[in-house]
Length: 392
Ligand SMILES: [Zn+2]
Image 1 (cartoon, rainbow, N blue to C red):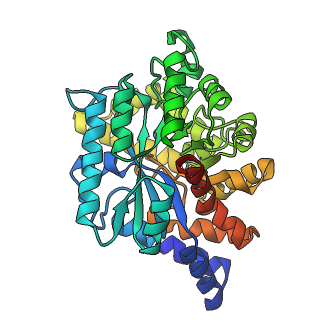
Image 2 (cartoon, rainbow, N blue to C red):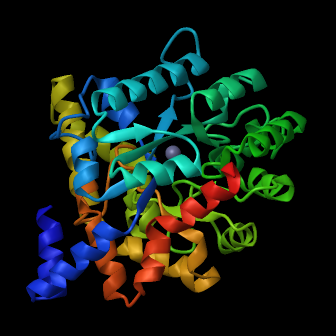
Image 3 (cartoon, rainbow, N blue to C red):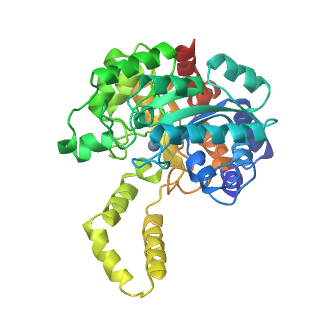
């Protein structure tokens, strides 16, 4: 919040100017397509009904930041949390999201379709939607997809970093293609796409490999989203999208929602991060850890060392607007949105500490000369258009 006030005072020194920003920000419908608080806060036993001192978001901070519509990510990793498996993990997270909604009945409501979203917005409540992140959670079973749909799934991210038997991921296509038995969609993958289209569940192409990406665009009858990906030309990370991919999404009338992770926003940060993870980092790690006998001290010192190095490369929050600008210049203003990935990333850009800093983005777009109508599209209307096209 402090940085929000700071930027307003830098942007404009008059009270009327800061009033203008808060008026614009409050009036627009802010839709964020990706938030991991279910995994990072709720599964950790934290009560997101309260304002927390950890992580990037909770119900009070989402409200304070002016978030009107939040897609909550239902996610489990390559190794399931429950012994019953991935699908059971997804059910558990949806249960917990429902409990959160019940506990905050005066502040938020869960839904799945476009018309209901509009209704809840009129009640001035936070609209909660479910995004299931990773096709592994349907366990190769269309009946399980149906169950997730009946429980409110609004989008399915076809893969996470791990490929599924029916769709290959961006990580696997780029970093370990030799492990893949097939690339792109297979017959079952095409069945999944068809069923998602029929049910009006948005197809999320963040995390999928290029082959899967183009295979989907060839057959989908509805516009797609990328719930949390940024621009490859600015930061060449396999999770970001190339110019050709951006053009293909625009042609499909879909939307790319910019991710706020420092690695996806900034190439230098990403390079430093990769170095620390690689062999060079291992050598440094061994030498700095040699200074400590206790294991706990070793871990703590290494974490502090890494944080210190990365801090030097952390981009400014204005880099979020650089990615938005890039997409707008390439294909126009109708195909970009925001999917910050709050509580799913270990580094956010300088100035953007948590959900309460969302007004900074509106302020930066105003500063760059975007019209109010265009800012409204970027901050939410474009995603709502895609949701409407899928669910109506
Ligand atoms: Zn993700």
